[in-house]
Length: 132
Length: 86
Image (cartoon, rainbow over all chains, first blue to last red; front, side, top):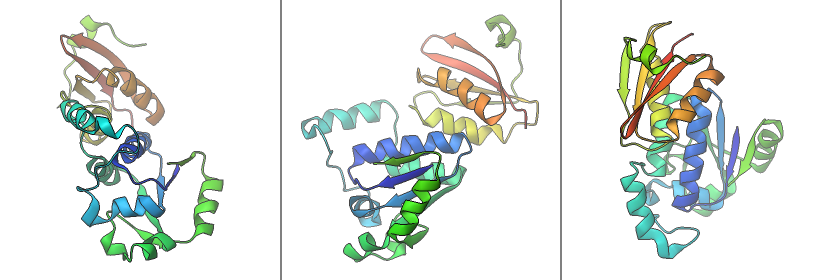
């Protein structure tokens, strides 16, 4: 499964982590390609402070409490657990890394930095390819 | 064919994972992690208060090659039984 992650808000990234977990549970290999805002959200310095939702911002407090009551971990903890349990590779778009002046070490769980051709090629060859 | 609740209650699981209070995908990942700690043909029991898990784990077991044995519904949670097959 290939996920091209352009978005960087925690609500969308929570959806990403849930899908990655499901795929890992089914022994599927997952390749995540981080683009502009996805890369920004994966910067280690931003993980916890990146809290603004993509939709219905007025529900942020209600959602936060609802997720806490539901026993749901933050998106990055779910993703970390999934990566520990299965094959999850996290690739960073080179242009995005450059835009944020980030090296591989600055980006949470990142494996390598890639170019657009590789992203398209991976999506073309995947059984499931999603854009988030 | 899943076992009846009476048959399930007689099983002696090799491992029980308590994933109550955790939402999807927590119980699923807990099951994936725990199944490796069960011997082949051994039984894993997952306790979950997440309504989706009772549907999710049978599908997971089928897809990855384990045997779903059945579910017992208890007040506020489910007991889900899977036999490790590989």
